[in-house]
Image (tube, rainbow, N blue to C red; front, side, top):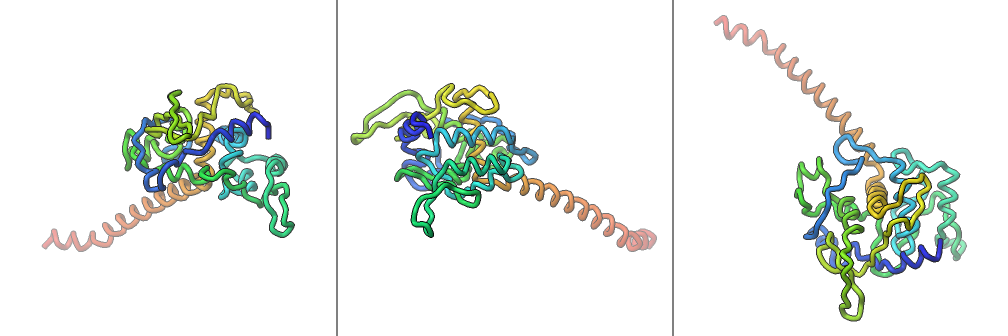
Length: 265
């Protein structure tokens, strides 16, 4: 990995969930923007190109500190995901090293291996980050608005990455940074800057574009089967609607003679 990328990532001390427990993580009081993502709503789906760009952002800007320990490299080739060709997936995995207990040594990762864990104490694993942040009280609250308009985990992640005000402060001998989305001071320095990444597909790497892309990718890591669940739910609703209609018509036909006799009498 490039030295510049490592330096940027090491400077990010992972305050996406700092401080406090996961219960506190759902009580965000900061400013969260309602970004539009392709996978929102009951009929939304992942954008493969965006997931591939988000993977690149994670690899170049986040991986030196933050892990994805629940994600296997082979899933990068799964349908409705980044859908990397098998040879590209294996080449990508080969850039990481994992500990092999049988060899008692480090070796290049393979498809069945998982992404390494977080490399620094206090740096949260990002595999389930968007799930951990999905229940906060955003601008539209919870319930049906959150289903239709978003304001969940990916919105928070993108807002957090874009929420630095530029203000800094020393507290207890450590440097902290003001973040609007968090609603206070965090120890993680800004990590995204315009043009810091050269996207493979030629998309301009603006700060907002990178934040949205990595937020979408982290949503996929937390919800890799979202599309399958949506499809299953849609099929289930259709089946229930058909069964409901059949039951209604059957009920009418069964009771029709009884109702006619009742009217005649």
